[in-house]
Image 1 (cartoon, one colour):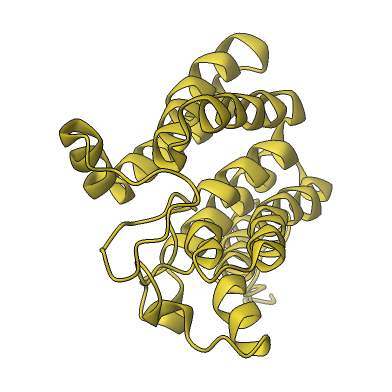
Image 2 (image 1 turned 30 degrees about the vertical axis):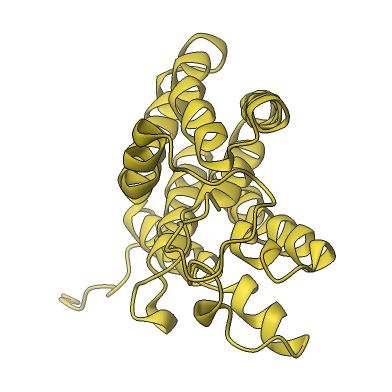
Length: 216
């Protein structure tokens, strides 16, 4: 009798979840803000403004085009992770999408010190359930254009998305959105404190070295 066992049971979902988590994380961990600014001759974005690798800090270099590109790529990696994994089922998609979000926040290449995750948050929602992604983007834009606070825009969009997802899509996407929202709030704890004190800089305001943490 053959007692040998297949080391990988491909009829089990676990290998797919594991692969989705690893690949999603590696995709999310690509520090596009850092790569783009270095390739453009601006040096290390971590030594500019707040030191964050997100689009808001890239904007402080004065290069709106690079900030927009960073925003698109940081969001795009979340969307890409979700859409690629969707071929293997909705659960695998959710795992890959969340892993990409975590990868952006805690990239192994930067000693787990990444961005604030808002662009990737929006990108993940677009890939997982586009109506929720569109809602979150519109919510962010509405607050950003009226009140001019990037962090507040992110916090409102993050808080509202799980609620809308629950009623529009269902509990699985709502749970994903809620988990990401919790991490967004944790990463924005300094912004929340400054908002409460009325000390949070508005979008486009240059304050090099002020320690302001961007929203993306």
